[in-house]
Length: 520
Ligand code: NAD
Image 1 (tube, rainbow, N blue to C red):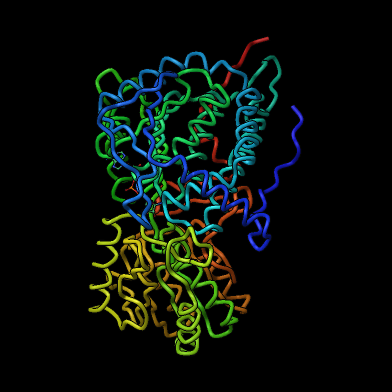
Image 2 (image 1 turned 90 degrees about the vertical axis):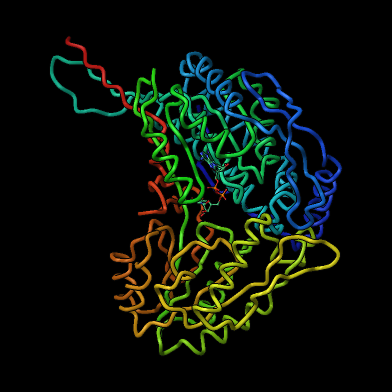
C-alpha cells in the first residue's frame, strides 16, 4: 500500500470568519441532536436499556447532551464474550486492511471535524481551540497508528543463520478493555481504540461517564460508517467501578488499555494481576495516569515567555490536563518580577461558557470536580498566600461548575497543594534558592509526567535533560500540547507505565512476537 508520509493535522484558524461560521453551524447541529437516547453496541447489535444516565453540558448542567445505557457487569461480560468470538476472525484480517480502516476513519472524521469539536465544547466544556486540537489529535492518531501497523505487519529482520529459515512476526493479543478518561474524549479514547483494532485485537470500549457522547461518535464512525465486522468493536457505558471493573476482571480479557487517575490505575493494576478461574494468560496492563507537573524558571530565562507558558499550561482547559502545570518553581532572584507577570497575564483570562469563543476558560467537568477543587482551595489558604482567584465564578445565566483561575504564592514544596493532583485551575508557586534546588523540588513528587524549564543557560538545560525525571520534558516552551509522532507521550513513576502514546513503540504494547524457525 502506498500512503503519503505522516503529517500532523493543522489546527483550525478561528480568526477566519468562514471557519467561525462553520464552527457555529456545527454547534447548532450538535445542539439540535441533543437529548436523544443512545445504545450500547455489542456484537453488532444496538442495545437500548431502560436504565439510562444523562451526559450533561458542564457549563449548564440542565442541558442534556444525551442519555446512555447505565450498564452493569452482565453487559460488560456480554461485550467481552462478543469481542472474544470476533477475535478469531479479526486476527486473520491482513494488517494492511486493518490499517485502511484507520485511514478511512481519519478521512471521515476530518470531514466532520467541527462536529466532533463542537460536541466536546458542549459535553466537556473545552474552548474552541482546545476542542479543535483534541479532534486533530484523534485524526493524527488514526493516521499515525495506521502507518505504524504497516511497519509492524511484515516479518521483522533477524540475523540469518545457515541451514535455517527464520521469521519473527507480530501477532495480536486478544480482547482489549479500552477504558478512557473524559478530558481527551476524542483523542485518547479514539487513539487507544484505534491502536487496539489496527493491531488485530478486538475491543470493548468504555468511555468515561462524563463523555459518552464522544465515545458514541467514535463508535458510530467505525461500526456504522465503516461497517466494521460485528463484535470487533463493542461499546458499553455505565459506572466505571461496575462496568470497567467487570471488563478488567473478566477471564477472557487479554489486556487493558487505560488512561485516567492514579487511584483507578492502581486498582486496575491489582485487579488485572489476579488470575481468574479459566484464564489462560497474564493480562497486560497499559496504564497512563495522573501528574503534578512543574515548570522551573531560572534567572536567565525570558520572563515574559515563562509567564505565558506557565499561565497557558496551568489554566488551559481549566487545568484539567494530566500535563497541566500545577507547580511553578521560580528561583529567588526573579521570583517577584515573574509572579507579577504571571498574575497580570492571568487577569486577562476570560471565564464563561466556552460556546462563546470570547471565553478562554470554561467550567470544570462536574460537581465532584468542583467540590474537589474548592476543597483544595481551602487547603491552599493554610498552605500558601492567595494572590488571585480562589472563588467560584458564576457567569449569568447558567449554573455551570466555574471556578476562577487561582494562584497561591510561597507554597512549601511538600504542601498538599504542591504534591497532590488537583486537576483544576489552581497553581502553586514555589520559591527556590537557585536552579539546583528548583530541580530537586521539581523531582520531589510521586509523579513524573511532564515538566518544563525556562532558562538560557545551556549547561543547566543539559543537567535538566539528564536529571529532570519526567516522561515528557520541554525546554523554553509550555508543558502541555504534545503532538502525535513528534512528542510521544507518557510518564514515569505514579504517572503510569510510560506507554509513549503517539510514538513508534506504542503498538508493540498491543502485540506479541512469534518466532518461527525451519530447518532447511
Ligand atoms: P478516572 O480514573 O476517574 O476514570 C477513568 C476511566 O476509568 C473512566 O472511564 C472510569 O469510568 C473508569 N473507571 C473508574 N473506576 C474503575 C474501575 N474500578 N475499574 C475500571 N475502570 C474504572 O479518571 P478521569 O477523571 O476520567 O480522568 C482524569 C484523570 O486522568 C486525571 O488523573 C488525569 O491526570 C488522568 N489522565 C492521564 C493522562 C495520561 O496520558 N497520563 C491523560 C489524560 C488524563
